[in-house]
Length: 262
Image 1 (cartoon, rainbow, N blue to C red):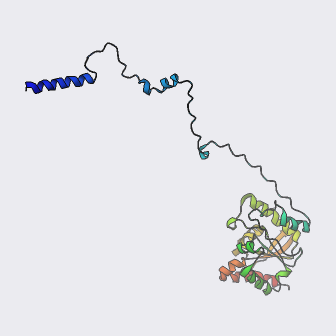
Image 2: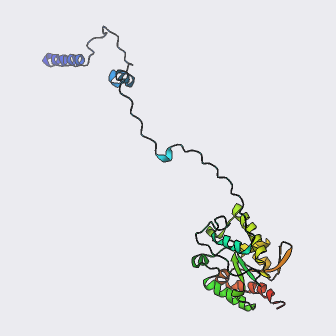
Image 3: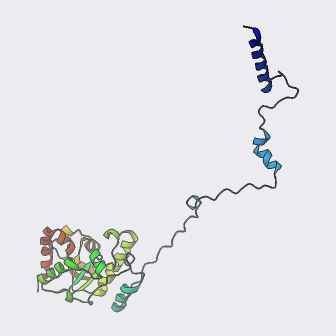
């Protein structure tokens, strides 16, 4: 190699190194290679502009903000049940402390008078009852009327009531609600003074006699109320009998016990 091209190439390389700042092996002043340039030094920038406050960070979304611990609700005192019949009926209709009135705005109230020859009692209204505002409405009510005629009585002669005046979600309740309904059950029976009691549905049978419906078939149940025994029988709810007609035989085995002595 040689000639004019080699000389031009050497000159070009020298110019490139000079522009890159490495034309000298050692400089006159030391260089801090790890020192942050002032343009990128946040601390230095803040120090030079003390009058500039840092912008406030945006607030967290409400869902991410710390929440105060919820205050524990004070336990509700047991309801006070009226002792007089008329006051009790009015209380069932209007009072906000009635156990079993909290599940719906529309209450389904008892029909009839105390001391009726037969009391019909179920745990709570069915969906159709809640809609129509009367117990045992629609086809279920028609079947119940036919069942009562078979033992020689009409619904108008009976006192008809549900333990709860509204229907719980899913037709179930437990815990403190069930305990208050249990208190209400015995108070209601004491004031109603029925001659005989027809428990309609497995829920009310479990509450009143701690018995399953199949075990109550064809049996008189002695419900002890304040030392007085009330003859009772239990049948499936008429709505259940419509859905499962095969259970009608079991209902009749229990109902016909009320024909004795008539």
